[in-house]
Length: 375
Figure 1: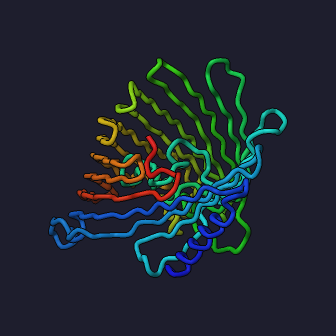
Figure 2: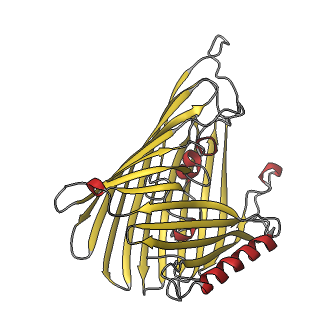
Figure 3: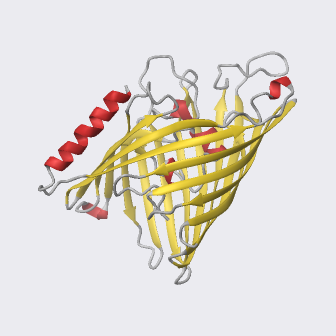
């Protein structure tokens, strides 16, 4: 399968080269990620806490093809080859969408296709754009490893809010990512029910060197196709950035996600039972958050820390928290990146708790205009 991926990539590059004299010459980038990781949790069941032998892994290869179709519209194609098995991996379509950026009534922007949903700050970013190595626990538990990525149509417009830049985005989605992210696997064979989401974002210029972005988002759909139960996510996010010069910056960013749903069973089809042994319908409210600081110095170095805390979509008693410390080194115009991270993760279930330490070194680079880690 790797051979098929390389052939497809080569054909894409050839087409781009052959059309180099045309007005539609797409930008093409290739971004691979590798990981060397060790943790002390593999033998905890034996009562042994010992760091494992460092494991060298292929994480993912991302191919980005992007171009303006005309002065009004732009198209993006993002394909990925997932790890860890490099030889058996298949090149898959992660995103494919058309964006109409101008020329519509009411100054509307339209996005149509398969894309990362504008929910919070981190969901729209690909992992190579993060300042850290691992996904925050609240994002992993409530949105899934791949995040909210669905087929749909998005409408956005700027709001007349004076000196404050404000944008409203609304999405109608096929609902395909609900089962992977937060719902129960649908084996009924029926078509997915639609999901909807929205985000209101405001951008404030605080000083000549600092700015603040805030946002509130919602996401709703059917999480249980058997009992037709609906869930609601509400999300608050912020990002503060201070950049006094091109060599130094400080970013503070966080999100708080609140989940509400009614449920007859958890995602493993375990029925909820009351004190009398009868099945019951439960009203569940859980939440999660992350907060991180990332400091850039001498232009090519970063240092930061992140705190995670999260319950699960179906239980307040299933909790986890993590503390991560990370260093970044980006020596060649953001086209090459090395990230070193230590993380302690503690998970708690009724009657049990477990803590795992991990150390990881991530290596990534970019071929093409799409940067590995834009500051």
